Amino acid sequence: MFRDKNITAEQFAKKFISLKESFDKKDEILLNSEYHQEMRNYIVSLYHNLIISQEITDKIFNDIREAEMSNLNRLQKLKNRTSYKKDKHKSQSRNEDFG
Image 1 (cartoon, rainbow, N blue to C red):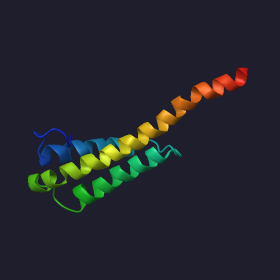
Image 2: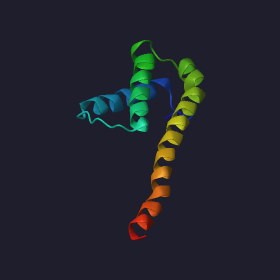
Image 3: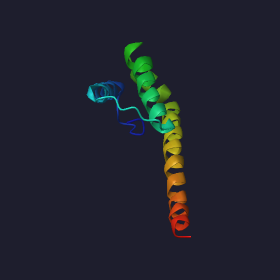
Image 4: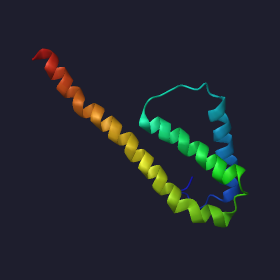
């Protein structure tokens, strides 16, 4: 939603609140992955900072857009780093079994 320049603050708030409510309805699963913990922290932080603590306006939304895209990019890199390591070492562990 941050990438789409046509999204207004009101549209973002409605969609984010809807997603956060459905997220909260799910049973909590404890995942030890750093990515999952960071993603959960990011969602909760964004919800409290933008939705609860202040009324989000188009100006505020546009001001934070780039910073939040950077935060999401950092989380995506964290996710990809973990999966890359797993894929990289899969072939090594398979070869060790036969070796």
